[in-house]
Length: 411
Image (tube, rainbow, N blue to C red; front, side, top):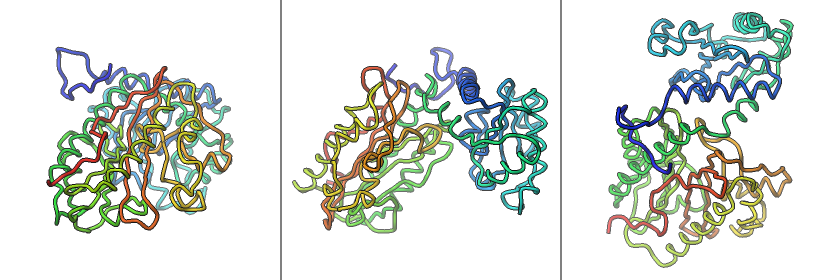
């Protein structure tokens, strides 16, 4: 079904099924735990907490690792760190009886593994309650993972790295996740529309970022990263940032609507615009970038690998005027995307050149794929990116902002 539904709850058509979304995500996590031999999984990662519980961890609390979730393979997830557990359970009835208060902020206060006893004790009690105390505990998403591992070992548990398990569970999207990705991609188009309308001389890069973010929140975003916005000489060599540089006539401007979340699911979409009428050289540079991007997209389908994409791209850093792949690592890349901005699989000619093994594409993966072109020492650079869904016979491009030719604004 190649469409993005409206966002309201309605009675006249089936849209996102939130109950199904929650159940299927949780089931995928449990199945992967079974495959990987994990008894209990603990995550402090906001995206994975949402995957397991649907809890939205607000951005001010993420850095302190105040919230975490514990999933016993044969039970239901338990959430720690709710500000008022009874109120959270009222709002999230699917978590009834499994929301608990926080157990401190050890990322700030702990000075040794011995300081983690309260949390380790809670994890151990859940494992024992489900008869899983002899099975490995997977740890994910904490800067204190090494200490948690030591503390669990000291308490008689086997601790292992749990991130690969959650990564593998999340890499193939369910039908509702795919629909949410379509919606977040549609939201990015609203941001681009408002930005394109606003581009004119004198407006600053930071002004365009603000316009884009405003549009995203108007569309129901629950979070967004700062957009990338580079203009004029800031487009070459490639970088990702924004400044207070004013837009000037003739400037190319590339913008990434990145990390724009809807129900947690993120977009990552680059487009390049021109302030005023573009030169023939700018148009040719744009087409070079677009052709490179779509050559890579053409190699994405179930059963192909990341190497198949890399083989469509330049085979040497000399294409961009450098003699070292590491100088141009982000110039042609791809990455999985979903609840996190950067997920697996990763696509990179640099990784191929360094001998990292290829990853096979599988139906249901969503990939953000991006390219950059520009002459070394030149003024102009072009960056483009699409989000694509891997299908059995190819891929579906989820992002629809026009890309066929360089869009001229303020004419």
